[in-house]
Length: 360
Image (tube, rainbow, N blue to C red):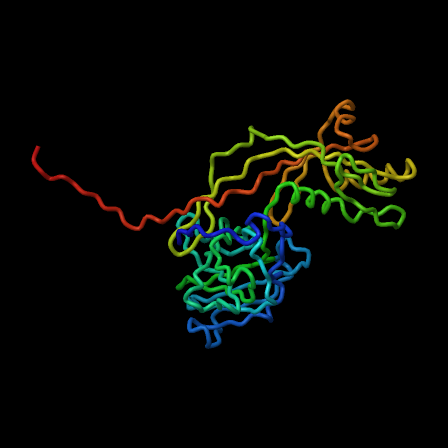
């Protein structure tokens, strides 16, 4: 595993640059035919590692397709590679993908077996200056998990035009099967991501055959035209009861990892109203909202899990926040600010003990 060096910020982290979209798809991991299997020399075709489309064991992506990677005991050093249209991920801070394997990796002493690398036309996969790589951890066998991979140390020549992906087998002597889904680049933004998570959950509602728009508006903006689901962000509070001192390990490489602290916890309150021309329409929209968003629920946005609860707020407080007309449903979402980059840590490889043997 590797201690990941600190690097200069991405271009969009610098003063005066416009913020990028919070999530950018890199590869849906749903087209096995686009990958090539090669031996350790990077040229000779391999039959010891293979990739197939998977439509039964799939992650959270919308397409209902993942890929299944299988490797024999002799696949050490063999790799899967594919080319993609060049994509600029320099304005994003981490990659995320979903993984499910038949055994653990990187936890409890279990060895890693799969490594991810990226390349570009300027800095290809085999370039000796292309150092960025990540060993993919698996905490629990046969369970879908989200893996976060920092891109702070990704070469700018790769980050601005990623056009190649490699999955390399780094273990020998034991076969494995692993499922992968939805590789995306993200730049976490707490409020923007929470807004999108709420909107995504309530999108797709219809009334009398008409699609009902849903959006988060500022408290001072006018109500939308009927029919609509009106959402207003009404409060944001620090949540000290959810402060954690625990840190998680991520960004595993051949020499170490990063110890990453959790982000600061916040409670974000939303007022949700049904805008309709009739009581029947209003009732139908309210029922659709509570059917999609239960009193105790959980939102997801690119693998972030956000607990959400239906809460009561007095009418006086509602009037003060400028939320929509009665009846109003108030939901409280538990979110966190983006995590810091964290500190590099290294594996202990050798312990030396010196004993003073001089007589007392």
